[in-house]
Every structure is written in structure tokens, then in C-alpha cells.
Image 1 (cartoon, rainbow, N blue to C red):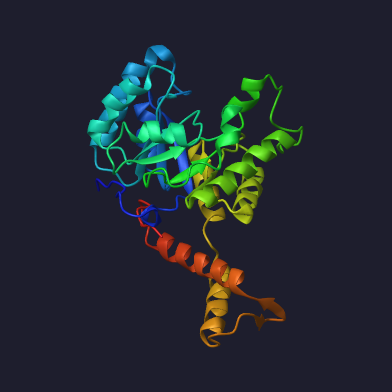
Image 2 (cartoon, rainbow, N blue to C red; image 1 turned 135 degrees about the horizontal axis):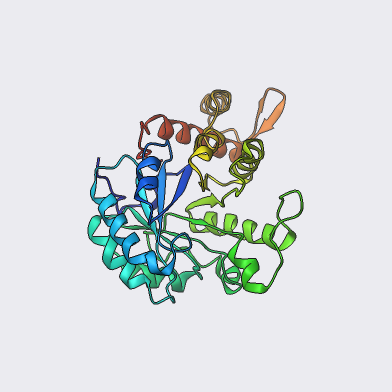
Length: 302
């Protein structure tokens, strides 16, 4: 099924639970990734591909894009100031990617510049925290282009850019500066009315740690997460899929308000619920309905 994201309202963009990175110069890995339950693949032309291999990677991605697809396919191009992004786009756009992942994004100016290079139906997902300047632009992504489908962040390039030793504590948790970057991305995405996508969990062998990390992401307001290994995808999907209990509780809360029109606050199982709780319940039900219609490809939106 050769599907592309439409250029209608942002609400029509899918809420991706899992976005799996795949090196653009590894066609064998692309084929394997297409068999995973990832909602989207990010075919990488930036960090995962050495400079000498980029022409071959562009050709391999274009060939992969031309085949029937069951997932949304994004391309991570090189940064706008790299001198490479024009060649990246010239190679891949004729084959119809669903979206472009923009590294080293710096707010509205970067978003506007990339949108000018793309057809209107191609979505844009900026990686919004990879330079020091980027942190001061995270509130500027709204009302620039309806092509914006989300914001995500990274915790590797930023410490390198400022000479920090690491972004993580010994236990793997983020240090305070990178907790700030994560939080600003989360609120910047919601301020712009688009999905907030959690960054990768680098230890792909640590399934317990990944599950806890993804669960915290959903708890905090992220709607999906990037992955670096196929084994991470089922764990991420599970974390960002409402459970049957979540859905049942949400439906009970919605039914309670429907039975009591005009009442602002109600008692549900001994706790007070009001408009924010109703909004959250409605979001859970929408997510459940959308995800139940994904089939193998994750092409249903909410």
C-alpha cells in the first residue's frame, strides 16, 4: 500500500507510537525493518551514513521508497547548513516519502526553510534540541506550516556541541540540562498542537529499562518514541497503546459526564473528576480506536 500523509488538518496526521531508525546504506536492514510492527521507519541519511556512502544511501532509499509499503516512511536528511540536504531531497522526493526528519532544527526559521523545499503533502518532524540555539526556539514551531507533524529531541548532539562529558547520570537518567531539553520539547510540541515524540533509549538489550523509560514518556505526555533496534518496537508500542483497563475507565468517565450534562465536576469511584479528566479520557478512547485500526501499517490517524 503506497500511502502518503495528506496536507489537510494536522489532526489527520497519525500519532506514531514507534519510529524505527534504519541506516540508509543498509538495504538489508530496511527490508527487515519493514517486517516489524513499527508505525513508521526513519531511513537515515545523516549520522548513520558515512560521507562517502551517502550517494549510495540516497539511491538505496529511493529504491526502497518505490516499493509497496506498510508503514509510514520518513527520511532523516542532513542538516540545512550541511550543503547536503539539497542532494538528499533531489534523490528521495521523486519516490514519495511520507515525511522528512530534520536534524539540527532551530525553530520556525528552519521549519519554514525546509517546508519551502518540499511538496505540501510531505510531513516534517524536526529534531529540535541538537544545538544550543535550538533550546531558545522551542516555542516557535506553531502556526508555521501544517506540514509539521510532531517534535522530537535528542540527547547526544547537544552535549557534544557544548563540550559536556555526557547527558546522563551513572544510572542512565538524564542530567538536569537534558531534562530541561526534554521538557521544552514536550511543551513546545503541545503548544504547536502536534505530537511529542520521546527520544531513543540507547541500550537496546535492556528491555526492562526501555519499558520503564517508555512508560515514563507516556505518563509525561509523549505520544510515541523513536527506536534504534527492531527488538525495541514491540515494547514501545505496548507502552504507548492504552490498555484495556485504561480504555474501560475512560469510557466510564465519558459516560458519567454524558449522563450528567451541564455538571462541571463529578464523583467517580470516590474521586472528583472535571473537564481536564474528561479531555484526557476522550484522548485515550481516540488513541485506542486509531490504534485498533492500524492493521500492519499504522496508517490510521486520530
